[in-house]
Image (cartoon, rainbow, N blue to C red; front, side):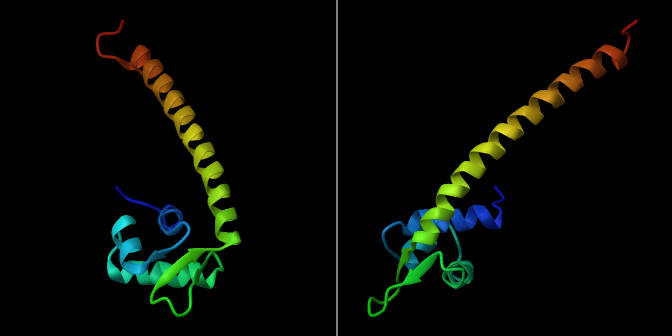
Length: 106
């Protein structure tokens, strides 16, 4: 399934939680090494994650990253509700079209 960049960022931050190493993030977020490096560069640059010095490759979510995750969760829930409503409207449209255009519907 295709994931958006925001979904991947949220997955990476969710995996990191209170601390995780690069390989753990790579496997748990289902990313290639190249992609995990790219996303870690982005989230560290954005101040959502920090690398812990002297610990190898340990990463931790910052306060800004936690705020991002909270906002992303609300956004994701709103988006899911909207998609459900769109699906309901499309279903209603299909029913109306079948009433008008179904073969032999006279």
